[in-house]
Length: 116
Length: 115
Image (cartoon, rainbow over all chains, first blue to last red):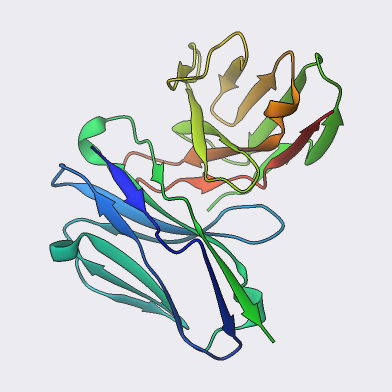
């Protein structure tokens, strides 16, 4: 069955610290997509990254980086030199190509608090 | 990505009433979705809004409670009917632009409080 687990409910760090948000997924599909979204206190969901199952290259975008490892079914997200503006709830999501429905399965989210 | 707007952004409603939420996109999209996010929880898909036909509802959601319309490729509405305090949530619409991408983009959400 498809499932996304974000075991970290809440993380607090001091500004400028690095922080990694964990995401572990379960799927029987060979073709699937993984996503990260940010939800700041205002409530909107901001798209951060999409990764397909055939592309295990890690990605870096500014202070953000993502580590995709199929061997451990993980898609972890690291923020380097965290800032107060990074405070938000971060969601990991999975979409399976074979379902044909394009539905997302969301994790329960990790609340990140960056303290000044 | 295109601009997605939702109206209203927030509302406080009385038990037993209904509220219609609008989702407008500034370009045509292939698919539109409606999600519910209860306080402190993750997102749960309510239904896929199909253009010109009945929406496809997820388990636990029914058309009588959450009627959805999608008259064209840029607009959809979700109605929350006969509301109770348990319906207090953020309701978000999302869009998927084309078959070549699986990415969904979300509207700003509607914060609903039912008294």
